[in-house]
Image 1 (cartoon, rainbow, N blue to C red):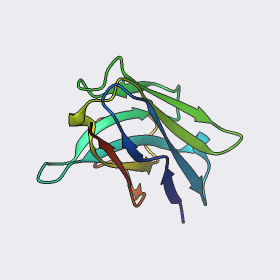
Image 2: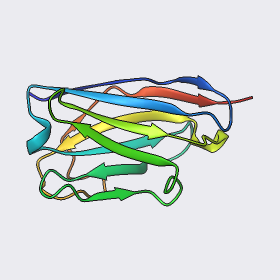
Image 3: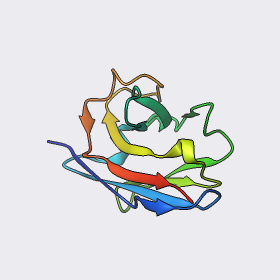
Length: 124
């Protein structure tokens, strides 16, 4: 059974950076497509970024393009989300997700495994 554990959330000020990490157990990063989603109170879940295990194609949500960057560490079995120039509207619970589809997708349906989430608060 694949398990995902997110870490790195916290309280930051607008313009600051934060790095979220998702650790995978019970499976390997090299055989799972990984995604990050977020959900703010009263809003629907929003796609943030994803990377496919076959070929490593990546997608980013329009609201984070140019500010957020995905990276993977196969040796550590982790996927990280570097978030720069954070804005108050980036505040949300961020979820890591994993699926076996070969290519990255922007929809939640292909992702079978989900982490518990980590809170990101952006406030001055």
